[in-house]
Length: 510
Image (cartoon, rainbow, N blue to C red; front, side):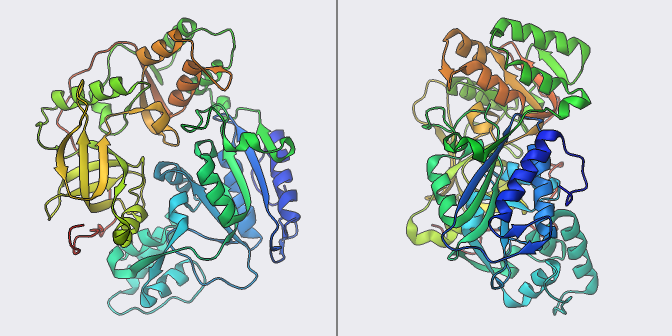
């Protein structure tokens, strides 16, 4: 543990030492800073588990620092330099843009699982800048770019570890420096996977094909992926390969939100007891609000978290009605959720372009207005490194008691979207917002149904996941009512890189 400057708890230190010993057996000695080539055909998988606040993210970040200090090369989704023979590599991945952005805010160069499967092909001239930023080359001289522009790129990269973001800070657009995308041909070495409780069996198998060494970081108290029968991928690992963090660190800062989340572990706790606990906490601490209505102003940036689809659809339509949204169009500032991409295989490049810019299933998006071409929409992808895109879109507005959604905008093919003012708790996993509203009547229904998942009452698992999405303030909404907005929808808070990227704008309609 000498390679880290932070003070670990006993269980963090033990997990660090165990993972270090695993890596040492695979030729990565963190204590001595010695690396030997990977042994072909040898695979190792381990997991670090723990509830919210147990220090998994801190441990991951410190492990990354130690590996970098030992000379392991970091592989990111936005740029991959020429592979040096016998060098050891590390990629840090998360299932969603939001989860990856949380790690990037801590200085960890994380990317999405999907993004690592495909790598960008850089224009050779601008690749020199990427090599320089990654400290693998000298500061280049590029026609049309001043030293000041390169310095801006360097300053940005020091803060955010994003090559595309740095190049955008220099005044370049993605279409200037990325000429295409290719599927990864070569396997990778070490993979750290955050929020691994969200992985399904197919994703896990794909990762095992790419990486010879995997370390999974996950919360066993969250909800398992749909169709996984309540099981998570790390549940299948042998006990010696799973290191559980017991101590809850963020409780040291007297966090009432985490106190409530961990109170759910009491097997004697009933729903009405927990709701009383929330009300009592709200009287003592303004970081918890016992709310009699949904605050519509918060829904534009952080969706109301619900259990039932019918509740989600009703809240979305109430949100649109109180804002006076027309039935046949979206308003600037309305939130959307990407529901996938509908493109045939012959348009593979377009699909890769969209997915590379963050439009993967579950991505949170803010609608900015119609694009230049019919069926296109201008969008801000929350948590993405280059958030502004213009894409062929199919937007679906679901209506209460209607089997088919209303579609205000539709290209023939492209990215599909559902409205994002409310989402199910399952889909909220991996995301975090400053303010989170939990629709308690839905959880009460789950409690009355006496449903269980993996041996735990379902309402408790739902409540745990929903509560731990809040980083600053939790609203526990107990009535089916909606407040009036204090003003129109606004997008002035959405900061962007200096040069927004227009995807597919010059290409024909799919």
